[in-house]
Structure formats: structure tokens, C-alpha cells
Image 1: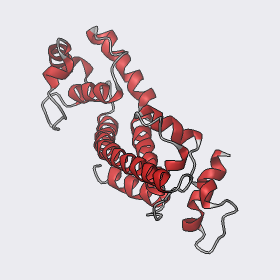
Image 2: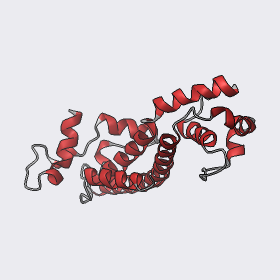
Image 3: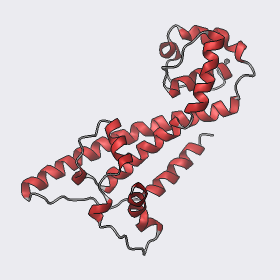
Image 4: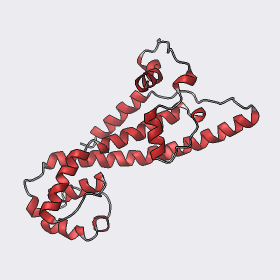
Amino acid sequence: MELMWGLNNLKEHLVPDGKSELSKEDCLPMCEGMKFTLNKYGFGDLKPEMVTRSIIEATGLLYETDYHVRKHGESMRYAGKHLKETSGINAEDWDLLKLATAIMMLCYPNGEYKLVGNLSELFGDDYSKLVDDAPKYKGIFRKLSCLRAYAEMVKSRRIRSKAARRLDSLVTAAERIYDEAQQAQPGVIKQDVPAAGLHLRALVFDADIKSVW
């Protein structure tokens, strides 16, 4: 059902002359993945009747940005074990971007690449350990792979922030339109005009990510 929901929402872009077997009303309500993402970002109260194509796209972009960070989880957690073994730093509770930042400090201890954020504030007491122990990690990490992962994660977080603000404004507008429609004529909901397809947004996102490499 999740697959059919996605395909029917994209059918007009994949097959311009194709006719969807589902009505627009059937296409727009939320799939489970969309519900999960909306709940994660504090929009769990959004009614299915309020969903517009723009909200679907913004939510999809949020999911994609999370994926582009989350996909590095296994390799980053594995790398984090070296922090415990070599420097006695417990990174189990760190988010992935913080962990990637620490790995970058160890891969490029001379500041060859500018890292995001106030590092001493980010790492607290562990900051001096990372700086002092950097020579011990020489040859342990694949520097280019770490750089690519870090760049992708930073870019994803920046895009995510913009997408979250966009979604917030769209949900606010949808709630207003819903309330006005209910007051004027209960049961009548205004949907927005479909914008660019989700697959096009994904391609733009991927191109944007690759540009930082």
C-alpha cells in the first residue's frame, strides 16, 4: 500500500498521459512514512484532510535529509569505538553529526578543513583529548571517506532546517484554510495546485549534495 501511495502521487510526472486509478483525495492522505516524519518534527496533529501536495513534498524532503545523515550511522558508530579504545571518550550518546565532526578533527588535526560549530563548546572536556590524541589516530580512518560523509551530513542538516521551516509555514497555512473552509462550508477542503514532483525534488537534492564533494 505504501508503494502504491507513492506511485500514484508520482504518476502524473512519471507517465504524463497516465490516468491514476486513485482519486486526488485518495492520493493525498498520509502514508505511514509520512506520518512517522510528521510526528518526529512535531506535526503529528495534522489532519489527513489538511494534507496538500506541497506538504507531501516538504515532508518527503525532511525524510530524505534524515536519510542522508542516517545512512552513515553504521560506519560512524564503528569509528566511534576507536574514540573509546584510544582516548577513553564515550561517544555512544552523540548524534551522528557530532561524531562525524570528532572524526574530522582526528583526520585533519591541522585545520585543513573548516568544521561547523564551536568545537570547544560542542565537545566540552573531550575537546582537549581530541586535539592532544590526534596523532594516535594516524592511518586509522579513511580520510577522504570521512570528509565526504561529513560534507554530506552538514549539507543535509542545513537543507533540513530550511525544509522544516517551510513545512511549518505550509502546515500553518493549511490549518488556516481548513478552519476557514469548515466555517464557510463544513466538509469542503481546498487543496493546493501540485508543484514539482517528489522525484524531481529528490534529484535536485542529490545534485546539491554531490556538489559539496
